[in-house]
Length: 112
Image 1: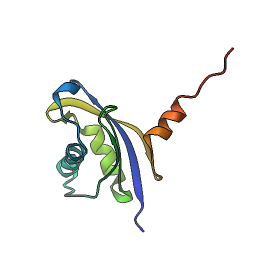
Image 2: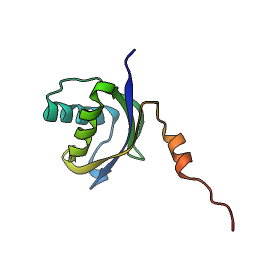
Image 3: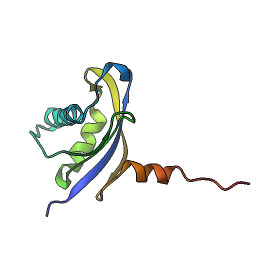
Image 4: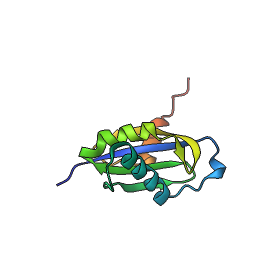
């Protein structure tokens, strides 16, 4: 059975109003980077969760592509010709989810 790594990514765009953020275009951007930087043609990259409003994507790649994918995400500087940064919020060998990650980061402090 193939092992996967999951990535939780936030796309930080200089001008978000100038781009169309879709799962297919995001996937294409990452795959093009893998091909450009490592000559890795058409690797498996599966979008698990996508939220255009939050500009967040959770996707998975086979374990053997983890390092190349991680490096490629750091090197991508444009999305649809708009300057951007792919912020890696979390990586994991187990499935990730937006809602669970949000709940963990918003812990209510006790009243003092």
